[in-house]
Length: 70
Image (cartoon, rainbow, N blue to C red):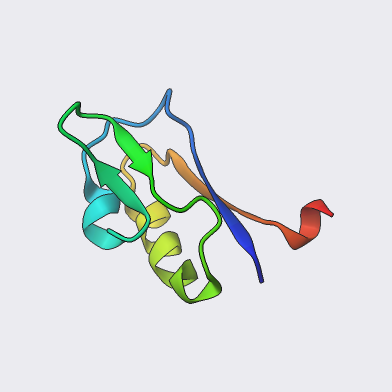
């Protein structure tokens, strides 16, 4: 099922835990800001995206199912 990665940047501390879990999806750059590399990734990355969301200490990452938005 298609999904979207959503980051609440007001909560995000850019601590790079998500990047350690899912480097295909997240990157903290030299400017110390988090970047979402794929906001609608392939389904095979869902497990990594869920793990990154679960491990975020600020719970700033959520996943939205795109099928339910149609």
